[in-house]
Length: 136
Ligand code: HEM
Ligand code: HEM
Image (cartoon, rainbow, N blue to C red):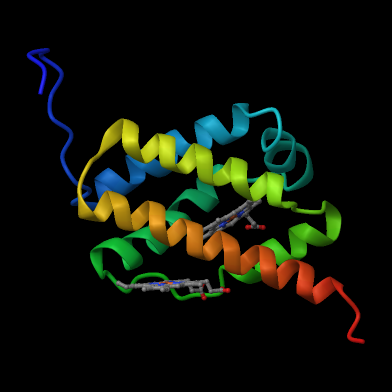
């Protein structure tokens, strides 16, 4: 404990919290030298359309909202056909995600957000590269 006047970070509790996280995350991702080009040049990601989807996704996972209808893998499979998404991309994605969460929150949901992203990234990476390897 220190006696600075920085507020003690609270846990993720509302959709507004998640929207703040996703907005801050994409700011970092777009500015990132490795991920930025994938989002900006390759995917030409329309953030206005995308942010509600990813916010739904995390609200479903963290707050039990059941507003995300699923199917997160498919858009990444389409993207992977245009630019190979490597372990390096996924690791950077996770680094930025964890740093974003930790800069804003602390608590069980914050930890769940980090842990679940790791699982999904591992699963996506495995499925992407498995799908591209011809069956032997
Ligand atoms: C409160 C509990 C949980 C909720 C609400 C939840 C919710 C979700 C949602 C909504 C997705 C996206 C599905 C899609 O896009 O089709 C997902 C994906 C995934 N979850 Fe969870 N999850 C939970 C706990 C867990 C746990 C405990 C594990 C593993 C120990 C796990 C492993 C995964 C993996 C590996 C994926 C990616 C699957 C893929 O598309 O390849 N989840 N989860
Ligand atoms: C290499 C790392 C990643 C890159 C470059 C990436 C990039 C993208 C892009 C460009 C889209 C928009 C696709 C479209 O609408 O056409 C997207 C959608 C999405 N991504 Fe990722 N992503 C990555 C990893 C992840 C991980 C690890 C997660 C989850 C933990 C995730 C969750 C989502 C979700 C929920 C959507 C919205 C899907 C929907 O529209 O329902 N992404 N991603």
